[in-house]
Image (cartoon, rainbow, N blue to C red):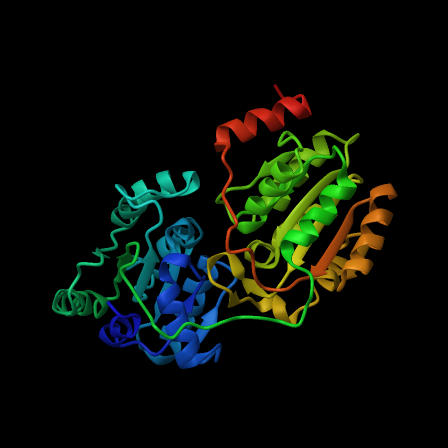
Length: 373
């Protein structure tokens, strides 16, 4: 089904969401139709942020908003859904469009498998009626379901469409780019050249895939690295936990702008704890590049100023490879918590692979190296 047909059937003129590869067709349709005009479309920091924005829209207009997300984002949305939107509280209606990663019976990456199993159950527990959209779903079926949903929405209920792999299509492909020269993979390679045997924690998505391949191609051990799969926005907190318990080791966190935005409060906590051995590096390409390139709010921000405001004592920004190499060399020798924002290009290699070790194998190697087991 074409994404624009789903949009037509839902009949909304306001969308808030966090991009997902399963919903790429819908995201492209929204960018082509509304861009990032905040009156109609907001790409939010996280899924709870989305639902709260949508709640404000409904309170101001009385109309039904749409919130889109990957199913991994259900966890972020549960609090406002259960404690604010639910019919037993304020009864604020909205339509959820959820990308179904890890759908039972369809191969997916390890971090999505359990989430895929419980996607429908989480909605059921919260009393949210849902309807799965697959490649076989017809327009008539969707219209019939939406007619039923409309009666529920009129009563202040929340409803959900769960979108399976390949269920939506859009022929108007959009290319996203910026003016920066360094690729994320080049930035990560520069870090590995300086970090030597230091522990490295990478954010979810292509950053972890690129680090894995860099180690493979360089004949280096994977024991130094913890690849954060799923749990977007939490790699810096994982790194903080490690750095505090291993004060004799320099710990590097390679974060992304979308991830940093998703749980930006972590930066304040890191600065407060101020471990002297942590380097928090954010690759900022202003995009949710791992799921299609949709823009983030960080494209208009100076994240290093945010870090400075949070209280990081040493703050840097690199916009080219020479500047990055100089900063990394300085930080390697420096004592004290450091933050580095690196402006990066959008894009990755077409032939980028995926880790061949399981998350459990990664954990055991990493913990063995740190002396945790």
